[in-house]
Structure formats: C-alpha cells, structure tokens
Image (cartoon, rainbow, N blue to C red; front, side, top):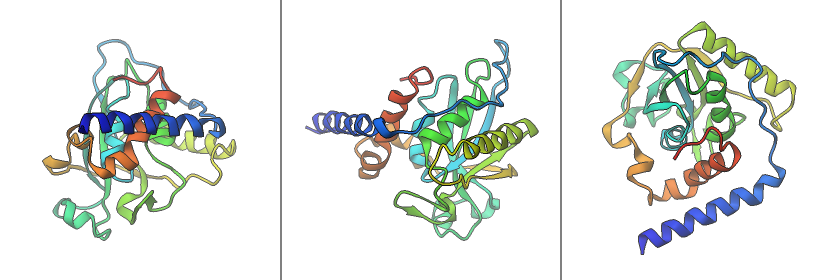
Length: 219
C-alpha cells in the first residue's frame, strides 16, 4: 500500500513538473566555468545553503560526479551548530550541504546550475517555501577564490539576462567552518521517502532535475 502510494505520488509530482515546464525559464550554462579536470584529480567540495537541507541534499545526491553530500551548518560558531539552536534563527548558521565531487566528471559551473535552478529558489530572501528565517537563506560559502569568482560571475550573468522575475539574493561568504548535522539528518530523503515534508516539497525537485537536466542527472 505504501509503495503504491509513493509511486502514485512520484507520478503526480512528475506530471506537475511537466505541466509547469511550458512556462519555465531557460537555464543558461555558466559563462565563466573552469573546465573538467584530468582523470584522477583530487576531490573538491563546496558548501551551499538553500533552505531545508533535506531537499538540497536529495537533489545533489543525483548529480553526476558527486561522491558524497553531507547536511550540516555553516555561518555560525561551533557551539551553536545544533539543530535545536540553529532552528531559532539567531545563531548566524544556515542549514547547508557540503557537496564533495570529482572535478573530472562535473564542473563548478554545472554544480551551480543545479543549485540555482533545481535545488532552491535563489530569489527568496531568508526563506524557502514554507520555511522562514535566516537559517533558510540562500548562501554560497566559498573556500577558494575560483569558487567566489565563478559564483559572482554566474549571478551577474543570470541577473543581467533577467532569467528570474526578480534579482538573485544569494549571499556569498567565505567558508569559515562546516559542521555536519546530527546523524538523523543525513540521507534524510533516502531514509524517509514517505515523510510528508519530503513528499510535498522535495520529491518535485528531484523530478524536475531529472526532466530538465538529464545529462547531469544520475539515479
């Protein structure tokens, strides 16, 4: 019964994505984008925040070349990197994910394309869907000058082209530290596919990603 309902809901979510796609905005590639690295290159990572980390993690787990995605907190101090405290919106932390990837399989520009167009809405200030507060802000935490430059250039590109109805509000901040979240938050979408929040807010993100960017999508 549960599996039948899940399949039906997935079909419904896909139908919603297909119905909305006619008016969907085009998704330009990043004009400033480092090329793929040579095979055998060391893994790289970037920390991204875009609302509840359950869905953002779930989307990036389907991006080709991604080796691991860790849900956690960034922007605040170590002592307040706990779900209960972060949820108050007073710690400076954002719910974030650390995306660890093979740069010979996926570029930084492709990661940011998925981030801006599939993982969240970069025009919502301090909220994503039903979640409100600075802990749900759109925020890129860069750890190298290249990450900052590519992200800044892409934001300028998208804003200049008026790809979105309003300007992008994504913050760019240097990564000071990333603190993994509690164990029960890790792989939450995989472990809890029938959770109401996942069904109503995150399943459609993965369905949209699969439809919109099949060359970047992996099961």
